[in-house]
Image (cartoon, rainbow over all chains, first blue to last red):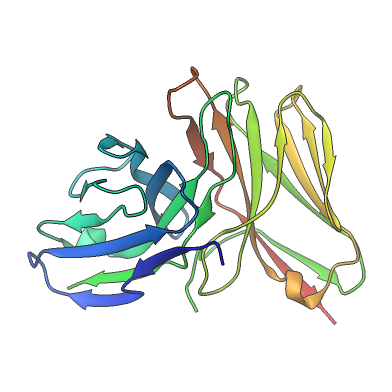
Length: 116
Length: 116
């Protein structure tokens, strides 16, 4: 089954304790992205990657890092989490997202992070 | 379940009726549009997409209409069922160049409630 898998689904942690949210897709997609979803603000892009070793900032990258060492994985790293990063996070992947190859993004089921 | 929006506009329809969900987009240069459905506790799920060279596209029970003159997108769901209850949001995609990642911007969503 084609899917995007995120782990963990839920995490409660404390300020300053480094954490990583993993994301894996089995569709051989080149494009992957991380979003956060907050009430009233919709989905906002954190970082995206067009291919292995190619990453770029989205709209709200501050406080986050990503890496893309393999095509299937795109972890989101919070080096020193703070309470304003409490949110619902989604990873997504797509077979193409440029002028000539637009395809819809497929989303994981989300990770609820609570930073105390 | 996860709360995706505390004050989302809500559309209530009776089971069996048709639903129309509207979306105003912002960028007249956007060239690709997507509708997503998000159920409680899940990630956004692709419903249907349309490119800017079209004004209508039909899927199974769903139709998307695009009016570029007024920058308006609508999703029509025929014979609405209880399982259609969810938050629906549109996304607009702006592609600058081939090989450059597109900018995908999401709306904040509309909650569809199906009454029996």
